[in-house]
Image (cartoon, rainbow, N blue to C red; front, side, top):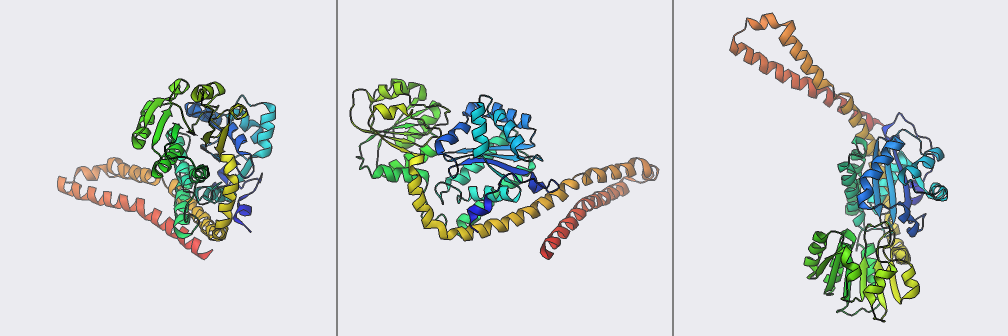
Length: 430
């Protein structure tokens, strides 16, 4: 069975007595959904907190993580609820109240749903890049980590997702280290650059860099490495634009100045987090002016930053995520033989995660032990043996206090160690 077959499963009722079965994923990826449609689930950075807090509250989920990249949007949930038709029918309007009935229906039909073991398998596969548009690219592990840190900072995640993401990062690192899946690594950025080079672009080409996030920063560094040198950077936050411009020895402007820019360009590289087109027909007309030469636009945003109407009126060579898929398929074929090794590592770590959950369950169950031991100690000192202690000299009291503290620590640590040893031994016998 291929790894792709192993990770796909839909609408299976969970076993709620197992904490692993609380892990659920609702996903839209390049494998089952047109990349342009994935943009329906993108959010502006400014809306992230309010919309995700509302979604978590309305769906009554315990924990929530939102991952958005150029070829996927995924919701990682911790909930006892089954992700069935009824759940999804409520979920999508909670995510976006402006969704039409048709959009909700489309979302329900196109969502991939994973639960329990299948969800963990999918999560491990995503971070290990074997579920990526470009198999073997390493950017995804950073994107997963950043998504967790962002949602954790917003108070959306808890203990279960924390453990899941910690294991996910470790699995991805093991896959990258112990297989050849990332040998001679490629990425969406490198594929886009490959297509750009095929156009025989001159080294003095004028670049407009719109957005200074991870993707555009990587692309800009690629361009500088290959001796392109004429860069102008636009970003919503001028400080971030200036930071990237300094690395490129270029100029920086706030995004609000884009429509007034008259410096000309040959190539636009754009990737922002905007929910709507950044480069409108009016802005493009202003940018291009009277220049009739064919332009190149590298648009790696989802949804696209370039308004599609521009392609009807101007001579533009567009390099976008969706037209990189053919090159990505060739890359996948070259790495297919590594899939089995990756699947072995992932399956091993799924079993390991189950053991982590068992240990954590014991830790949580015994979290009251220190409090109870301290209560017993205080009761003994202040009530049960208060009279006897009052007759003891200061030195004897000090020795007794040391003895009690020593025993208190042992009574806290020994049961935990014994419980863990039992769990480990139990795992070995299975």
